[in-house]
Image (cartoon, rainbow, N blue to C red; front, top):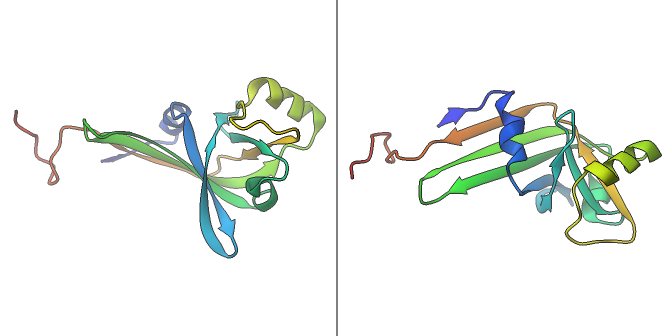
Length: 140
């Protein structure tokens, strides 16, 4: 297991097709799977219905986003977590830009918004395959 450097995390995150947005629902943690895209400043961008749970609950608060990639056969994978302030993109120019460059919604809605989660702290870990539970090389 190794910690990923700050510069490595966006590359690893950008390879994942979906992730989970972590927020608070009724004072308890909740995770929703979402598709996403990274913006030019490495912010995570989600596209969702304006009346969806994420649009109602994370606008203006700190949220987390996690994306993982796992190869169960090779016993390898990685996980990247972004923590930051979430904001619904409200300015028309930003919304128009994200309409062109942001993620495509998997469930279209007549009233969609973009949510940006700033990549304030970003952490990641990577597990390279080929190791046993105790770290010794596997023999064939």
